[in-house]
Length: 399
Image (cartoon, rainbow, N blue to C red):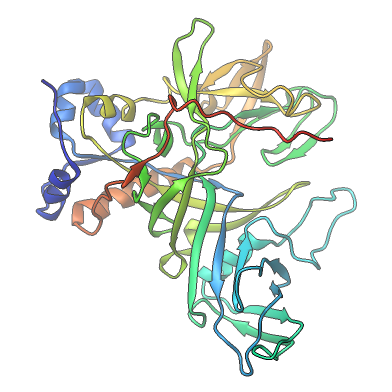
């Protein structure tokens, strides 16, 4: 009979300083050395990490009341519009929103230099942010205009709330057309001039628990340098399997997380505003998840290596997004990280949009927190839908 553990047992070992914790890289070597059963009997937790652009991110901010009071109906932070249809002095700043006075190069209509992701980074870095707000005025909220500066410590609450993060396994993007194109996967050169990918492979959190056997509502995570939580599945959460031409499972795809944490606990090196030439702004997010080794099956997936995990190669030119999926085949993360892959008989240079060294650092930090007893596992009150849930995406019908 294989090992069976509970969250309570693992947390008791963490509190006692006896938990055995390995990163997702370390556990691969451990399983290769001594096998699955022996490793599962020894290891309590495997830590993962990812750091890359996650557009579906943002923060809820409560500014506190001015004197006289004001119901803010329009808000700008460093001239980036924030959404205000919440309450009097609450707003949500989205990572991809763009500053209204942002200089734009006419050759690249999407070349924005500053956006919501940069506002979030600047807030976490302790910088002063220019707040401008307008209102129509009411009896209880008579003020109609305010301009001031705020900092993260000045305001009541700042909650990072990201509706879609930690995408399980993203495309490897290429361009078959005869012109350069500018996408959320970066600049893609014509005629298979390059290939970009954005998943950390063997460290990627959701690829190491593809069945969502341990991840759910209440899972405690590393988020932006602080402690955060999984609060629901992310938007566009359609977990499934990647299969090769013979029908063998060679990876997972489609799962996402909705996550939340206290922005005041976070650090700017793990929340970095970014921009993509010809496309727009975003936010690079650092996120890591501990995977409790409750049984051998969970360890089997947690120990998958870059050689065993694959990404679909997708043409992002004229055919995208009408031909979604691995329409140009599958490549392993070992191949992607080698710096070149072969597509349609042509050798194509590869480049990551996410940072593997940063992902490795996150997994190591999370391991350290757990070993010191500073981080206990959060047992989910409800697991997220896995690949057998039968979820399928919807496409907007244009009439």
